[in-house]
Length: 349
Picture 1 (cartoon, rainbow, N blue to C red):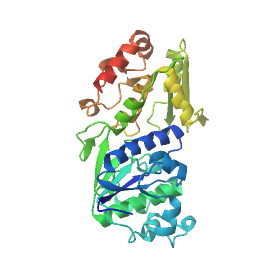
Picture 2 (cartoon, rainbow, N blue to C red):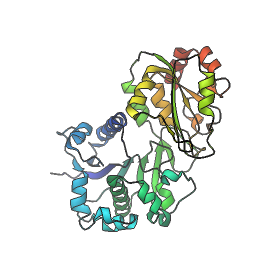
Picture 3 (cartoon, rainbow, N blue to C red):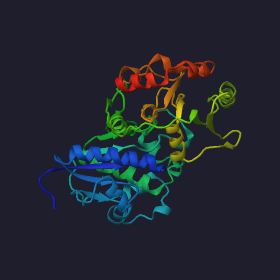
């Protein structure tokens, strides 16, 4: 079946519970395939293992080979009783890839969130990752663990770096566990091993549509650590009480959870004029993905002034007008020329 082209492996290692996010990643993956198919034989590893999703990503006429979880289990992890596995090493050691062709490139779209639900952002090492019971249990989705270990093993065997296209800035950095990687994010950065890529930006540009606005402001956030502002919800309710707003909160300390499904929330973003971006739990990162997603939903993201923007502003256009604090957010909503600023940002992205 195969010609003399070199082989490339594309993997998706994120838990994409949202259909909207999954289809977005599918379309981004499809653009990767379009760019690479003339030069490489493309292999794709998806955690979903669904034929219809495979056809959604690469139509069935394309000459590609796909590993779904069934093939991966049967051909690569023959001797592993997954439910009985105690740690990462047990999965890693039981993955057999000698039957595979040589791969010249390994591309990953998304990855596991570093340190899981404990939200610790210090450097981690291989020993810590592979022997972390907490991390192992947190990534409870079987297929994420398999694709994660599978990707590492293929890259190591072929002595190639993992070309990691990052969705969330808090995703695992393979360099921290001794696996060389080239990290790509939707903006350039002074951080070592970061390179700008526009795959996400180009996707949203291509699929941008106008939306009818029926809501003034929408925002949802979590309180999972004590250092996050606990009274932000009350401040927003008070400051924006004259507005048509939708607020969603998940607060583990006060046992509050008003979250809705991700797809439903993203639909509300499309119906809203404004949203808010607050600092990530890793305060030295910025959610460029959320910023771009909001802009091309015609929802202007107001950016709290405590966000870290030093590096992102070197290559991602963020006007001063949309920087806010909790005390002037209502004033900004009343004064900003919403359509004009959206147009300006799109022009300069």
